[in-house]
Image (cartoon, rainbow, N blue to C red; front, top):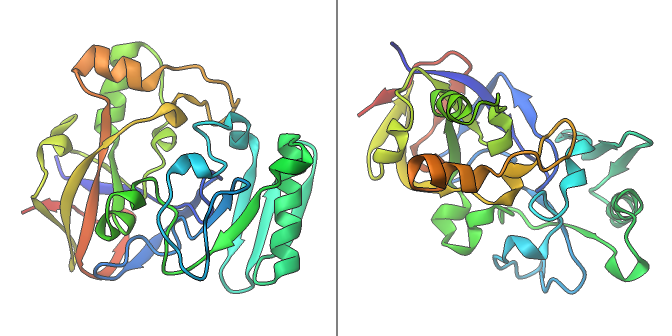
Length: 257
């Protein structure tokens, strides 16, 4: 069975919803375009946009601690710099190229999360810095692409007796046609997608963010615990480095080299 790309997803803002893409142009060493470009930092995070340094994800508002973020729908338009955020009760559009727009977006999130005044979020951007969970590991990992095997998710679903949405794992590239969990044994191997070439760097260890149901915002599945109980580890998916760039598209074949 051929291994193919089932979905391509960009997460412009750390902790918020993803944007489905039909194709994307990858560049060597630069990570998934537009992914985790922005982040809502907690007060006193210590982040300096003029001298960006990787910080632990606990310094930001994100699903692992703020499950109700799952009920927000967001979209970022790179051409206009407009970030749209919708909650079940309200909708806002913010020009986050401006300080006023970033402040208004931060106030929207504060109101939605019902935070006290001393917990005001702060929306940051410091490209080419990315607010990825593994940015604290190395600059290479900060720019790694997240790959999820749909067949691994399906096998896990069958094991726990509950259908699991692959989006819980917030990957950039969703593939299918590969034996379940085969990707976890591919560290240091290369894969090719058309003219692009990627190197598998590391298995993705899962955290409580994956416990959250993205439709209900309930923590309805002890994902890391169940992975460990069924497979002896808490890994789902892998991180990969882009070695050679090119355009990848839904339905493209994936070749293990």
